Length: 198
Length: 148
Image 1 (cartoon, one colour):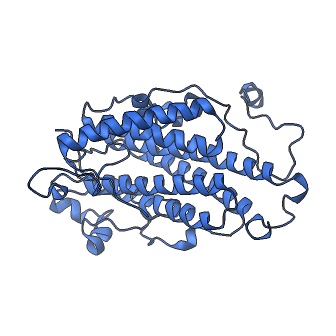
Image 2 (tube, rainbow over the protein chains, first blue to last red; image 1 turned 45 degrees about the vertical axis):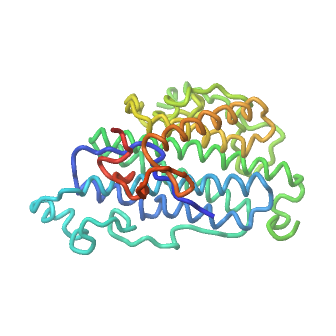
Image 3 (tube, chains in turn yellow, red; image 1 turned 120 degrees about the vertical axis):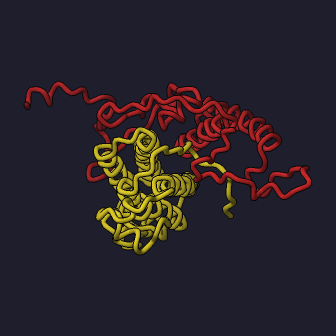
């Protein structure tokens, strides 16, 4: 089961509210390569993983991603606190404001609500782990792009932390594919689906 | 331009001659890799200098706030990072030993934190007459992380 710890993985303390930046950051809450999709992808894929290392890794990274979801939520919340009238009317933020006020809603920066269509659970461990490697790179690129756009140091310190986690997770998923291949012999890589055939 | 590209070192990511083709290949991180200490690890987002690859040289240099919460976050991070490493390196005895040392430090720091600042989860028993769980601030709030 899951139980809540009343702490963030990394401190989030944003001095200056900035709703336009919040809308950009929101994409890592509920966008196509965001933390909600990451956590659900790994925590859902783990059921069909055949070996202990793979079950453990997907559980541990999936759980960490839930912590990242909370950190992104904290950034968006702090960037949209104490809104003034002219900030609500800003054409970049008004369309979000009219639907969600200062609530945190899982959507992409362009406003598309989060969709399970942005992730996959194929039920074959090689296929799923390779998807996970790609997912970590897509999230890293998104964080790169946020760092190009944002000039708020309070936000960027947190983004740099989250971006580096993508690099570490990519390494671990790559190692997981190697481990899986070591457990199969070279002849039966792609010969069958290790999730259901061994 | 091509000349320049050839000068970029390829590092350790060499595909071994026996690796089967048409398979993704990421080399294993070597056993017992060099580590940052926990505080620097949390600032950088990894315990491992070998995986610390910032975007356009934007290195996070901001030190952690001096607070019981930040100490707890640093130790918790070290345990998490080592857990992921051990998930794919279960036979690395030195990493296992380090993981256990950080677990012990985390346990001690957590108990001290709960005594001073209140519960972190519903499993933390406190002796105050009132129900402390609901006390502000919550982690996502600007005044959060209980720095005071």
